[in-house]
Length: 314
Image (cartoon, rainbow, N blue to C red; front, side, top):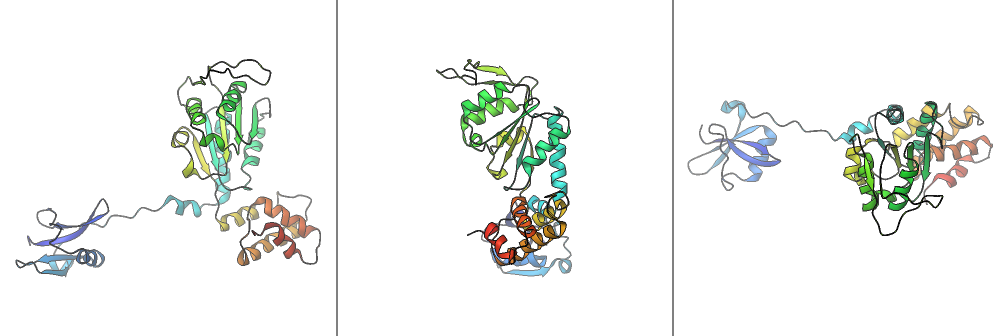
């Protein structure tokens, strides 16, 4: 049995392993296609003295094959099967951790119109925190210098940076955030330049200070494009829902959304969106549902066409 080999994977590479000695066969001893077939059919390969290779069932040859490695699932598969209400409940819990000072930062990503900003602000307000006093909300472009001044001016607050994606693309801004989000007891950040920075009142901002605030990022960019240093220092939550999850999320929120719109109109709006999704490429999010619900509430003769004009991608 010294010339009996089994097909095994070593770091993904298919190789022939001697079932007696454990040694690997030379490259040219057994052809790759023979190894593939042996692996597929759970067979062993017998190599004769003349070099002839014969495949035999492992049981017939009396060989116990090395167990095949268990293929790992992609985490994306698990995410796509997750209940969207659970996703948003987790965001609420993570936001509370930042609000209570248990975690210095949180990064929430996902498509536009998912309700990310609403759940963050409503959660903070539900904790008894007041905007401008306990937390501040900034939306739009931010430079490295502007970020530094913002952190200084709101050092004792929770800073919500909403759609400020430019900070992730600026090396200087990322370096500032690395210092601000460190897990050390003392988080010192610096901005050294020949020109002094000034706050909104025209007073000079120190070149370095100890940051004690917390930051919540809300962004539409993919988590794979986030700087690894930011990811590693923060809790992360992604709500990039599939079509099925997005429709499920809308159904979950129908009773709470658009209180002035009759329930029947909201149900009609959701049904029209599903019909349009089967026919066209549409924007499926909470904003598009609100448009559709308001149209259905007005009693148009052809609401489907009206909704299509609002949510179909051209």
